[in-house]
Picture 1: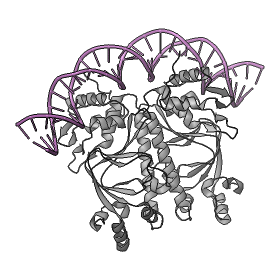
Picture 2 (picture 1 turned 30 degrees about the horizontal axis):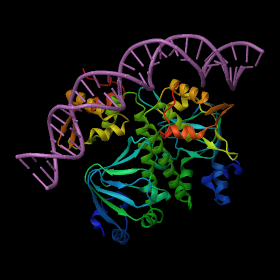
Picture 3 (picture 1 turned 90 degrees about the vertical axis):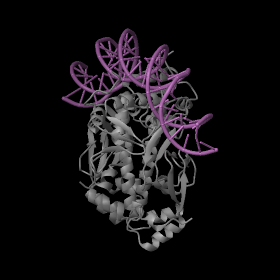
Picture 4 (picture 1 turned 45 degrees about the vertical axis):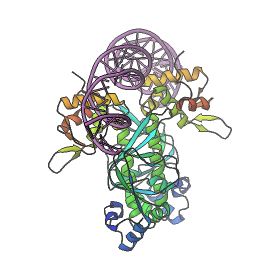
Length: 233
Length: 233
DNA sequence: CCGGGTGTGTGTCCGCCGTCACAATCCGGG
DNA sequence: CCCGGATTGTGACGGCGGACACACACCCGG
């Protein structure tokens, strides 16, 4: 049941915590592995634990009442999630689903609350993090305002890509077309077609479980309307 | 320059604050009136004050790079806004624009920060409020997943409507079609057409500067897909 | 009482993209 | 190593909603 201290130290939320507190947290935490497509948090539940992602990738998703899937955000390793219910005690606002095999550590609500509100500095770290999330969500909302699906796909790809030390730009844990589609409000087929064009132009290349972004300029140009949205020639 | 204490007491964020602190805040605050369409907060600025809305209505908006307007949220009286920059010191994430003549009270950043982080109870109130905003934003994002514009308009109207004491359901400060259009990612014309049908069916009625919602059931049914999206007969 | 700006109403038209239907691959687990 | 489900690829079609172009209605201020 307890989680090794070494692991706790990798969570930025807990940086600088005194050893005794860490030890106590370690006691109360537990780890679990989720297979791809498994549900980590179920919308509407009251389970209210705070969760940390060790490795893998998760996606926050919701469903419109007519059953259409909507992608809200991705969670990457060393980040935490599920804070909202810890804070306000309301039911889980959305589903969180593993899009890759993932290891998750959970901390029960009572313990998480004392951590948040009775530990010097953590409260400020938490609000800062909530603020960042709000900024991300409204950036995502703005992205959805782009008129053409192709633009939205490119913008989303630009958002997901990471510049490595060697100057390579890469998207790790290559998301499926479907996962992208629900993030940018379009159909899976449209995403596939956009990918076809991007790969034909050498902008994007599949490489095992990641995408190589050969021409990140192009992605940004399309996203920001400087270049016309690509269409099949 | 100072703002009357009576006004401060109407802000729920400040409830229960000791009189001396309230007095101090009152000294440092200032009030300003904004005309319709005036910009209250400009995206990218570093002005970083915390703002309270006394009366009127504001809308958070952003623009896609190709100039398309995107509506993010509405602000109603006695609520506060502009917290993000106060918290993280980053530039303003979006525009906030008055959609009706509005009175706004502002508090400089340094004062707002001490209020937030060194005043018992306020920090928790603040995170709870950030949590609510996150929930609202993802609800709005889910709304955008609805396939038909008509559904989205109905869902948005349902969201905006308020049930009065007498059982009447009403939307105050009737938003313009344009304001709704940018919230639900559609064109102004489409909103107009949906309104036509809704009014023809007696679901909605204009009454001065508010909308009477005669049949809120219908709005919810359409929003949730139980009834077909209305179209001109 | 007039005038202009802002909001609303409506027609037409075209292109795009969502949907459906299938084929072709890929991939992981037994 | 093989099988089955998940993922990707592609064609055809049809409808719907965005863009454009006006007309009109409304409201406030001068």
